Structure formats: structure tokens, C-alpha cells
Image (cartoon, rainbow, N blue to C red):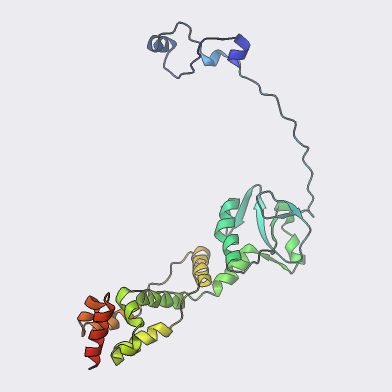
Length: 254
């Protein structure tokens, strides 16, 4: 704007310094102007579309734009003031609610992708009482988290970790060749259920909703397994050589 108004052809520098004299000496220039003496530029105001007045009956979808939707018979609703959302008393941004809760519920199939999630503004807080098909997000999260068995989840996770250990994984594929006690232990571990992807998502949601940590529970599979394989020292040594391991297991059986 300065160049255009003053038809300036020379280079113009915009610098920050302690004094005009110091700037002139440092850059070797003759003409230094103090920006504070300039009149502020006034940008022309853009013509904006007039805001459409929203009524108490206008239901907004929970999305980045809060689009108006026909009133749904079934919906999960979230209270909002201005641009923020309240979940369990915590004021969150749209992306935080979407990533922590709504996406997780959809990935768990608690919400299918056609489920309507809506936003109720300050003057709409009384609407849900006459709409039995509407449920607050907090309540849906509490109901979902209440179905989670933290102890069972941790036990299944521990057994899965045991089964994935190198030597245990190798011997699980040779159950019929193992000594009886070792075979029985590994067979028991093999037959125990595994956490599904849905279980993992539910565990994450449970931690988020309750604020609790998963319990620290360890099964005795590792200790029993270590005690049994200690009787056969070459098992871990030969685990990576199929031929040698087969020969060793035959010797044990004999």
C-alpha cells in the first residue's frame, strides 16, 4: 500500500530496532520512517450474508458446520454453549468430542453410521424430556462402559502376551510332541479366549469415561511355563531349528 500510494521505486525494508539512528547506521540508509507515525490502513468491509435467525425447533447435527436436520425420532444429543461442547462436565472442542467419543462409538458399532448425533443449544435443553428416543452422550457412554469387564480383559491380554512369546509360540505348534504337563499348560493357554478389536476399543473408552487405570493382574502361565521348560534346557536353544527341535522332542519322548 505504501509503495502504491508513494510510487516508490527503491527497496523498502521493514525492520524492528531500538532507534531510527541505529537502523540508519546499521543498514547505511538515509531515510528511516517510524511505522507508528503512519495512519492505520482500513480494509474495506466484505459484504456478508445476513444471518438466518434460528428457532428453538431448529435441530443441528453434530458436525463441523452444525447443519440443520429434520427432528429425528432417535438421536444422541450433546449440550453446547457457543462453539464448545460439554461431556462429563469437561468443556471440549468439536474435534476432541469427535475423536474421543463419537468415532470410537461408531467403530464399536454402538452408533451405526446412520445414527443421528445432534447438538442442543442453551435454549433447547428442555427438548429431550418429551422425546424418549433421545439419549444424552454422557448416558450412552456410561451405559457402554458399564458392560466392560476390566479384570477379564486384562487376564485375556496377559495370556495373549504369553502365547506370543517366542518359545511358547514355537511349542504351541508342536503340542502333540510335548511332554504331558507342558502340553497341558500350553493347550489350556491356547484355548483361552482372546480380546477382540471391539474389546480393545471398549477398554480405551472405559479408561476415558471412568478415569480409572486397568488393573494390574498377572496370570501364572509364564511362571509355570518357565518352570517346566527349565527341565529341558535345549528347548530354547533349538527353538529356531525345526530339525534339531524335532529330534530333541523325540529324545525327550523316548
